[in-house]
Amino acid sequence: MVWTEPAAEQFAERLDHIGAFNPDAARALRRKVDASLRRLLEHPERGRWVPEFGPGFYREILVRPLRILYEDHGTSLAITYVHRQEEAIGPGTFPFDPEC
Image 1 (cartoon, one colour):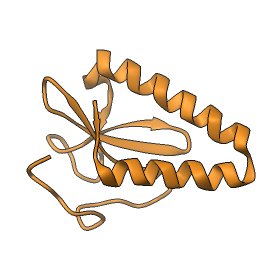
Image 2 (cartoon, helix red, strand yellow):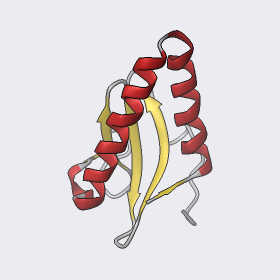
Image 3 (cartoon, one colour):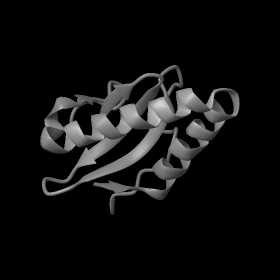
Image 4 (spheres, rainbow, N blue to C red):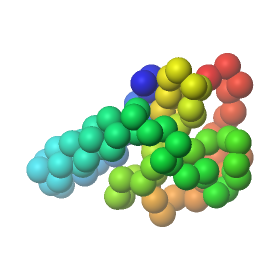
């Protein structure tokens, strides 16, 4: 599994924000995300297609309060973006990089 730079930064920012108010909650969220990503490695198809994009683009898993978008490249997964569940996303939200 590979984290893109934007996704790693987004995840760190969200953990930092939560940790500033509740360090225990930030650590618990990190553990939940880690466990969800381990399961995802075993079953990459378990994530749903991102509704804003439709089939064939990004998949996502939900780990409250986060939406974790990823691409399944067959032999590897790429975590591409991490958003809060209430944030609107769409094709104009972030740049598309066909090389990822």
